[in-house]
Structures are given as structure tokens and as C-alpha cells.
Image 1 (cartoon, rainbow, N blue to C red):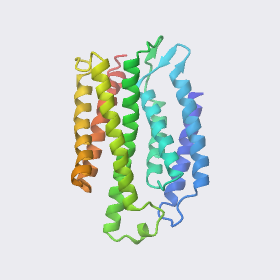
Image 2: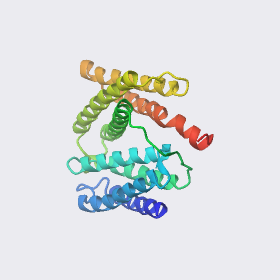
Image 3: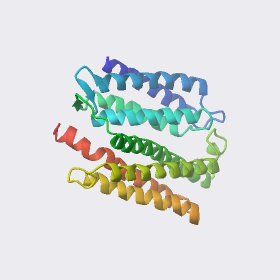
Image 4: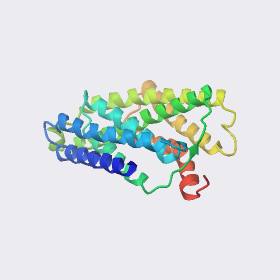
Length: 267
């Protein structure tokens, strides 16, 4: 069932990606109705994959790949929802394409972290929920940063195709980028504070690398956000800083667990 659902979701993500890319520089853009239909089938199939993968007859499988699939699903749903109101022609093929690749890869990557009984701790749940939400928003902000860089570069090269395309105005993309960056940085701040307040092992040997990397990423995100609001920082340096910080926080969230679970097979 999981294999069939994963392939079905991947197929419709690929179809949605192909449709959007085929009309990337078209003046009217991709058909919103067709994009919504294709993506909805993919999103629902993706959700069923998650339900069947996480909730097994032996317990809850909270492996890195399942957490990655959940994070990816949240990002896909968010970007798709945003696209209903604002043009997101560049973002959709990126998130749909990545979701398709991740779903197919999940069929070949071992994941079997079974938890028979999950102890619900308010502090831990708060930290994890804020961390997941912050990560999703910051990744979407990173996609907006890449979109901003792409549109800005094409405009400076006086590309007529992009001037007549369905892509969003540069100033709108920049405004949304810094709004997302501000919200995401604020949530990451709260997530780290919740971790330091409620958790005892933030600097334990097993998790110190995650804490240090998260703090480095937080420092970069905070500096960029404050720099923009206080000193008007913008442009290519900000884009590269955001991309770099996102890479660091991704390494913090998924890097060590992926190595331990998949490469070293410790679990």
C-alpha cells in the first residue's frame, strides 16, 4: 500500500511540475485549476503515505525519513495554498519536484524507528512543534530568496521573456521574503528558548552538535532580519546568507539522525 501510494503521489507531483514548467514564462501562467487538481491528488496520496508509514501495527515510526516526509508535506501544502492567492510559478515545481524525489527515495531508504509508547511531555512537544513550524517557514523563505535572486538577475539582464511572464513582481517577492524570514526567525527563537527552558540535554554529548548548529543558523537569520529592518540590507548577500543558514539548520535537524539511522544503522 505504501509503495503504491508513494508512486501515485510522485506521479502526480511530477505531472504538476511538468505542467507548471511548461508554462513558466507564459503570460497567463499555468492553469491554476489543473495545477490544483494534480497537486491535490498528490498531497492527499502523500498524506496517506505518512499515515501508513508513521502509524504501524507495532507502534509509531518516527524515523528521520518520516519526519522529512512530514516536513515536506507541510511545505507543499503551504506553498500550494499561497499560490491560490499569489503567483508562485517558480516555487511550485521546486517543492513538487523535491516531494516526488523524496517519496521515491523513501522506498529505498531503511527507516524503522518504532516507538511503542510515546511519553507526552508539554515542554518537549512545545519545542518540537515550534522547531518544525520554524523550519518549514524558514525553508519557504529560502525558496522566496532563490525566487527573488532569479527574477532580479533576469530583469537586470533585460530578459524580455520574464518581463512578459506570469512571475510575481520583484518587490512583492522581496516583501513576502522578509515577512516569512521575520516570522520564521521569531519561531526559531521561541523553539530554542523552549529547548533551553524545558529540556535538560541541549548541550549533552548526543545533541550538542544540533544545538550549536541551530544557534549558528539562528545567529545568521537574526542578523539578516535585523539588518534588513534596521539598515535596509537586501540583495545577493542576503540571499546567500539565508541559503547558507537554511543549509546549516537542515544539517542540524536531519544530518546527524540520517547518518546514525541510515549510514551507521544504529537504530
